[in-house]
Image 1: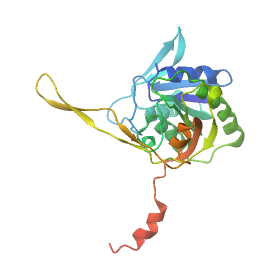
Image 2: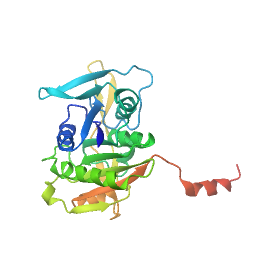
Image 3: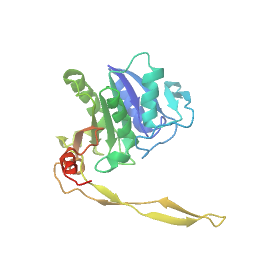
Image 4: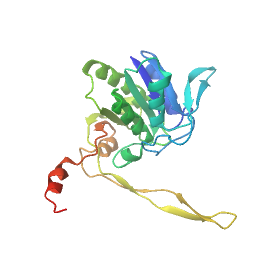
Length: 250
């Protein structure tokens, strides 16, 4: 298949390189990724500034195109300008750190896959449950298998798959669970600081995690060393509330 590969950790991240090597064995892979880290930018797109594309070499060979924009920008410009025809599938990752629960909303990794789905292309976002992974084998061995299934079975329009893998070697993965987006969230705090000119500024720092007690949630599967696969889409409508609103006296 023709694979468009991106991420939000930047084109020089280890995760995207590992996935590129794994997918290139059987697929034609094109990399279009942010030139710098774009973690937690959500589905932002660049509107007020020009976008610039720069070729990037890694290990002495052409690797891909770096973009001074967001992950969603990468998908848009790759499909509109850089590729001769749309890819068969988009893969976003491997992201450092899990994208589960509420974090799915913030994730640039997931938003790249969502943008692809909006444009009618099957897509997968893949993250590993660590910011310092021991290795990427749990992801690099699984994603090629998943792409074979997508090629065979197809995907509904507008849907992408949010995949989270545990930070263990492939042989230690407990299995695969089909999950829903959970409600796990972070309780965040800011560190108040003062710069040399006596100006106050704030830095978002460590967060406490509120675990999800639902065993069918994405984070619960990941905690038990399962690969979590959650089908997601961009329709944010709460359909149950539509009938409720119709009854309001407004």
